Image: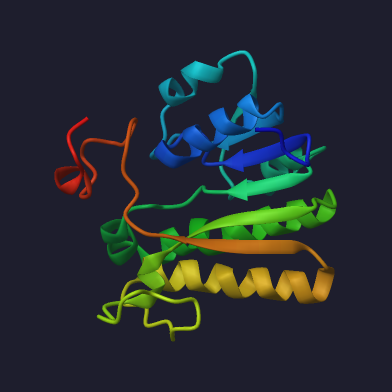
Length: 195
C-alpha cells in the first residue's frame, strides 16, 4: 500500500507494535528511520527489514539523538515509552521523564523538521475503569495510574502543538494489542489466542 509521504521516523520501532508498523511502511515504499533504546524492543524484531531501514539505538530523552533521527522525516510515528504500568507506579518520575518529557522532545524535533504529522501511541488506560461500552473519544478521561496520566498529558500536548504551531498531530488510544513478536512475559499474552 503506497503512502502519501516518502519518509518516516518510528520511535520505539523495534518494539512489538512498532516493528509491524516499520514493516508496513517499508512495504509501502517509505524510507524509514527507527529510534529505539531497546528497553522493551528487540533488534531481532527488525530482522524482516534489515538493510532497508536506518536504525539508531538511542533514547527519546536525548534531544540531539531525536533531532538527528527526525531529520528529513515527513511523518513521525511516536511509539517509544515506558510501557509497563507497574514500572510507572513504582517510578512515576523516571517514567514521566520518558513518557512526558521524551514525548516533548519528539514533538519539538517534529516541529523543527517541519514534519507533516505526528501519530502518537496513546492508550485506552486514559478511560480508567469506566464500565461504559463502547468507549468513545468524547468520554471523560479517568486515569488511575501514572502511565494513564502520562499518555493523557501527551494527548493534550498534541492539541497544543497543533493549535500553536500548526503541527498536525493525532493520538491513537490502543486497547489490548496482541500478536506475533509480542513479549511472552506481557500480561496480555495469557489472554491472547494461541499462534
